[in-house]
Image 1 (cartoon, protein in one colour):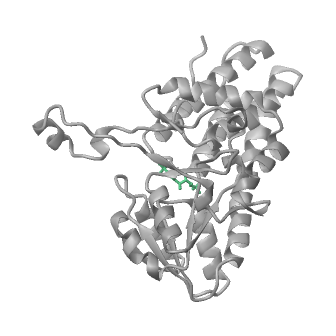
Image 2 (spheres, rainbow, N blue to C red):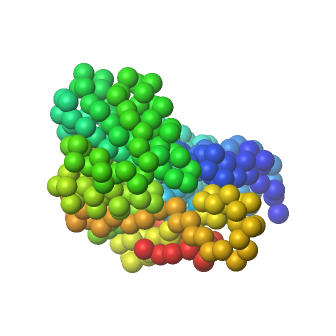
Length: 331
Ligand code: RUB
């Protein structure tokens, strides 16, 4: 069996260990991994062998992290092109490379468009709260600043991995007046907040949002204070498999990310849970800002039908991710 190129293994490890993180970046890295796998393939030049090898790579890449549907969507985008293509081995390699490049470019453009659309929804002088680090949400906030709007942003720390520090740094570098708060301070600052903007790992056909753990508490506090909550999400964050009732697996990460190893050793048998994501029901979401425009969460099913139709490949890939970690919790 042809070995997977080290570059592909490295990308997969970087996704697993969260050196590459955030649903959009994970998706682009997945597409890049397929492209590299095709370019570095040194097995037999028979189209059938190459196709089989690429199916194996796709399975491997999708198995890295289970929750963000952007990853199987990116892989499906590329693999669909390969499955539909005919021609020599060289032509098939070129098909994979072109599809991966197209996904990456389209994805980056979508983030930019969301920034432009979302920024128009923010008024000069408003205070915004965001959670974790979302490239799409940061794009909205930075675009608002570029439009000359003087905004103030609260960024949560986002324990246990502190992705909020990335958000803070990116906003500060863009000249946005940002303030870091502990996650537990969300409710106490909410009375000074005008809008919440967060990103998405997955949006289901009923308009529920799966995003960094804590998002649903932010939404609850916003709902109580009558603060509107917006989700910045490219359409490849919508789950085609959810149309068919396939559940979203909430990733559980190692306890060492939550509690220091020494403390765990000193307290043998201690129970620690570390769910990486949670589910915010559509009732707590005012609108989803996509590259196609702003939609109510209840329109998610329509977007899915429009974009994917029936996508059996995507369903298969999501199932692969589910098989990968059976200890997790399903939405
Ligand atoms: C990141 C996270 C982000 C979404 C959207 O979780 O929950 O809000 O992935 O990000 P993690 P983006 O750090 O565990 O990957 O807008 O960049 O796609």
